[in-house]
Image 1 (cartoon, helix red, strand yellow):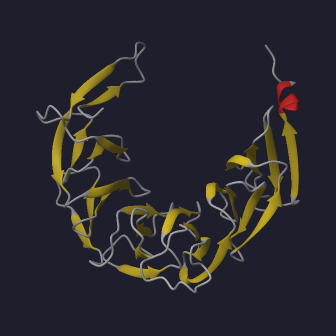
Image 2 (cartoon, one colour; image 1 turned 90 degrees about the horizontal axis):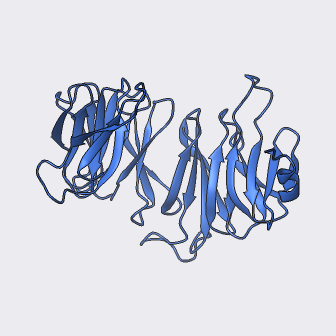
Length: 311
């Protein structure tokens, strides 16, 4: 909660919370927005709304410390290896990197461009680089960070709505807002339109920018990094993304989709791609499964689903 951090030892026969005070005597502390745990599980880090510090909590010694992180921190995340806790300081235009297993060490501070209003960081899953960006402002530029001292500004076609990096870290799926950047050209093909950018993370100049017919409501990536999927509002289709050629293709469905996902890979076979699924609008319930290897859709509706239920 905003005043306490509850710890539950799951190895005990009787589970109960041990409450650690994180308010530092403030009767109305800032709302706690994010909690992340270091790779060893020893330290927790808490970001509070509007506070210019984050909290480090030693889960072994039960000690809580305040760590300065610059003005208006808006995102807190761990590097994929769990060894660093990284904070985006929006107003100071900085990245603050702490050694996650020893918060007493001085953080490494990396400067971001002063003319960009950036507030979020997204690491690629293999830990080679990260994207620093914003969805709160109409910025059409992002920063590619090498997790060291190198930051490169990359221009996009439109402001961002959301980002997704494939599990292999090789490709980026960027969905854009319908709203435009302040300096956008009204005669441009993407003005006032929804758009998607498919980008090669190994070479950010290799990309494909595509118009969308409607707003995206969900997306998912296959673990092998070959395909991604998304669904749109009022569009009875599952859209397949091919990261090899940076193109997408619509797969027709019998009704509008609601949620989308990809099944996990059961066998370690590079020749087979895992199927995607989409739950759909239907009075009795409906799901469709799409096999990208066969380009085939199998749909089951409520009466088929319910026939498999046993008491």
